[in-house]
Length: 190
Image (tube, rainbow, N blue to C red; front, side, top):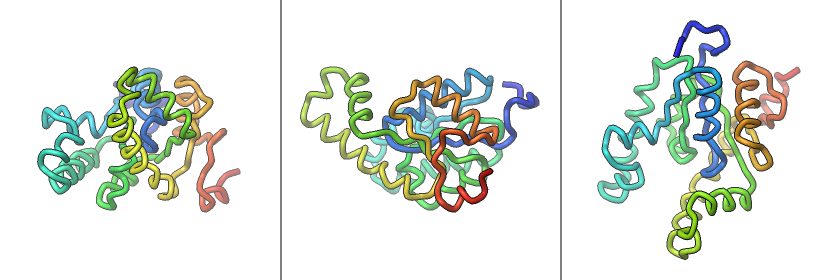
């Protein structure tokens, strides 16, 4: 990544939102297209700890999972010119919202039926197992309140990954076509 490229904004693009809304896929597409760094907070934790955040939570408890998430987000304080993917559940913890100061926040949303379709495509036959589906629905329910935090939103329901990436890049560069900002931000837009 060349941080001196004028087409990569200085401030980060922080993607959050519902599970299954396409944060990671869109983040990868934006990173590849612009040659910017992609940082997935949960993937960083998994790399450092050798297990997923969900596994850490189940094994060591919520306090350990929160501590690791806060440390991972603190480590991003000095990052710029990057795309950062943060799960909606992590931003529901007030201490993790410090990432807001590093860049432009964008909350990806999606209709429930499309999220379930995407999860079915990703999980295959496991999706039909009642216990697997129950865990999936419980995880999805925990991410829904992220939209109440007031970040600008992009509905990915009928968009391809490339279309989401196009709109995210436009937003990052301050074009806001196709985005649904919270009411307080609408007044600032032309």
